[in-house]
Length: 337
Image 1: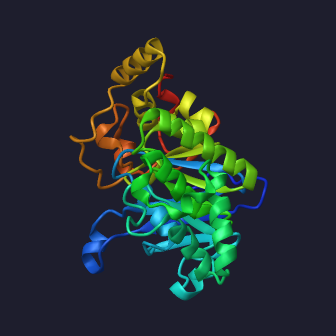
Image 2: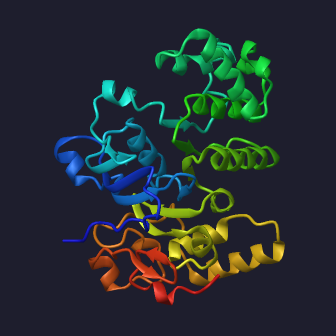
């Protein structure tokens, strides 16, 4: 039997969010048991004022973890704790009482806002559900818009009157009006152009530091994660491949999959980009489209140039290698970027 997945190292401060041995299976009955889990024993903590990035290719399970944390997808097993309270199986009525502390910003700024409602109506709604009076809720909505760089009188306008970047600022303001402690950010800048991405990322960093917020930042781009996160969790087919301080994971990756992700991330220096591409090609990591999931052992076996019999037979535990927790039997053989 394989040991439970080790967590990302806990921070000194009591975590705002704790995820332990999270397993998510889709479907039910025998079919679900035969199908590999979408999330397989994932663990991590996030401290107040900290950003932990979840990164991986499409289908790696990033958004499923976000849904499980938010209560949108029931976990099969494992626990999710908010400020020490187990919220994994809380009924909807009880979870509503925690809604102010745990908020979300979704990916698409165009579909996340109701076009038929004013910005004020959208921002006031969660406050009214919390019992805040109409006048006070409207004042909070105005202050929320101002905190993200928009005028307070935007409460009287409609989403169609704003650009994509402005709509995402509104979505952030909607999440902040309830004074949350934890924000789940699900690809919040992937639909924006590069200059707008930078503005929104800087805004998020400022808000996190001002309000001591804990961010679960979900992204596919390691470059974006490197900018905002202090720690990173690298996922592949629902399992943690590598985790640790963002500089350690991105500058000295110890898993072949992390090397491939890092080499694929764009950088503004052509010489460095060419060197990373050469490192990836030299390592010989297979493409995602041609790989079939491994039935046992490490899920990355079909794509890994370092795979041996032990990789097929045994799932590698997360172990500390040069500052990062790495799930690879041959982490010491992975060449540097």
